Length: 251
View 1 (cartoon, helix red, strand yellow):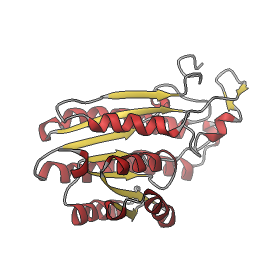
View 2 (cartoon, rainbow, N blue to C red):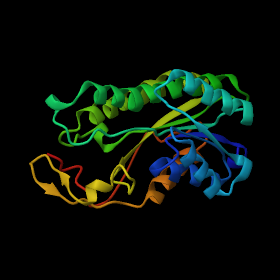
View 3 (cartoon, rainbow, N blue to C red):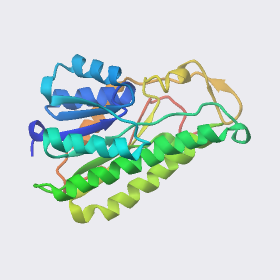
């Protein structure tokens, strides 16, 4: 099936990485459902895309099971099927020592970063396994923090490590339905979430060092490549990062 006939759901599509990927998919010819918490931002992206009826804004709180069910029901109602889920919605609880992190912040991180991804995957699987032709692809937005933490980032790091397990489990469990699951791990893309790193990021040795950022187009291009493969091939894990950012030498 070529891109013109494919349908994608992108969560966290109102800004940053989600917006960049949604726009790239629309340029490629996909029909794209843009999910996010703020309707006005989603509608701005739809307008910016110039894609007309191929772009659909659906306000969604991924931590709320009812709105997630509604998101995928709307996708099926309007476009009839689902070929790609880009599980991107997430938050970062910044700069708080573990012992000072309040429960509400921890819970919000788990609810959005982990449970939200799980809920979206559940609904995507149910659509993909029942449709004709069967199958599809799920791409989870992991992070370099799925492998190596930053200081004072326990909520984000724990949830991103959990996304790694979610991706691995799904990759095994979903093969029988012709559903491929992979993960993109992104380091210092120039989004609102990472912008602070260019001003100075706390390192494991206690120093604060400005870190380089990369353009969001490189992330969008990477997702497009992962999505372009036939279902008999899969990019299991892909890391794309600013070349000179600290990662392999963290700690």
